[in-house]
Length: 106
Image (tube, rainbow, N blue to C red; front, side):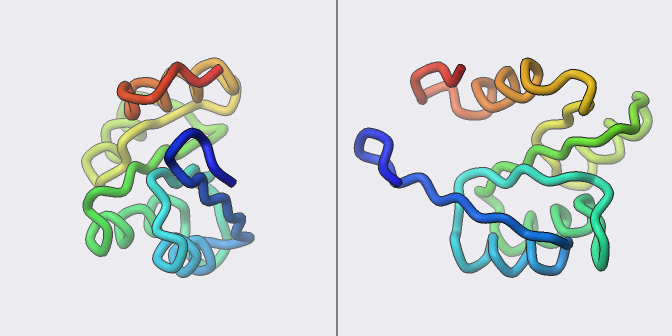
């Protein structure tokens, strides 16, 4: 899929191991992942992806909340943190914050 001059790559994964594999093969600009995933949590996958793809942007979403969880995710390499109860509004805010050069996503 193309958006202007940029190609948009979209993939899905049913667990954290597949997430890591797909992200490494697709080389996306953004990974959106759930914290709770089988095999490898979204946070563990994000931490590994951060090492292999430092320019990759990662947004993690979860039903859990709390300042300490958010801080832990950010400390371990996640760029954005969204509570599922705040979707989709907060997700769009995070995408626009991470990609300010892009026309506003709505």
